[in-house]
Length: 339
Image (tube, rainbow, N blue to C red; front, side, top):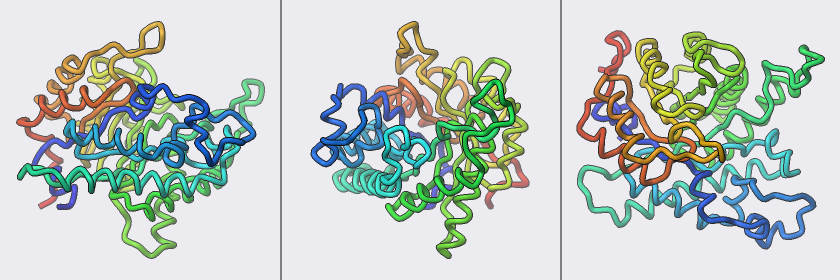
């Protein structure tokens, strides 16, 4: 079944935090290196995307835990897997391979999970290729003394995203998710790269999901856009969904999701953090708390896709899925509705 058909029937569940689950394994530098990178010139602990090559069984098991919790969409472990971000570890050359393998791991997790799944009402899950915001921004200068300076060019960003998209698509993803957007110009580079890849490859484009991040109570992105401006800036991509993730907990995200639900002509997604971080940078919000907030959004008709970001676990996703399973999805505006 095509995902847009399923979205008309019910609220879909996207998975929770990959990083939070990786942290539970308490991996060492040697674990990150594996045999292949045991003599790498720089420290690589913290390069979670590399685990697709050195600890693929861990990543596959995390995907399966989210599927077991009820996720309809699982994200590839590729948040920073483009050469701009991988340069921090001197691993730019691995970008394509990481994305290819990440997509294959997620696809294999879905196949293995449903091979033993007997329920009549759930026989499919979708793999979303996760495309993060990069660690450099096109709209802001990193040098306060030189506001006109940029750390990279638009063409640099497009080139990096193009390689990432190529790996994800050839690895077998169903969707492409441009997420945690704090600079819409970076998102535009990702959109351009996606369109260019499918044009060059002469393939039908995969559905695109777009998710921004509001960084403070003013309701703006880090680069200063209001939510309406952000939405207007990306709608030319004709995304399957537009939404918000990260930065805020569900309690703080609510007014912004409500606003977006009134603006969007496509489906709306939301996957907040497990509350706001405590003094130690950890997340204390329990699964039932997160699920309660998201259930409220669903009852108000704000959302089509829900899940969790930083601090959320399979326990959070399971609670969210249970709380929204009987609730109706947000209806598309009449003029955009799929007949």
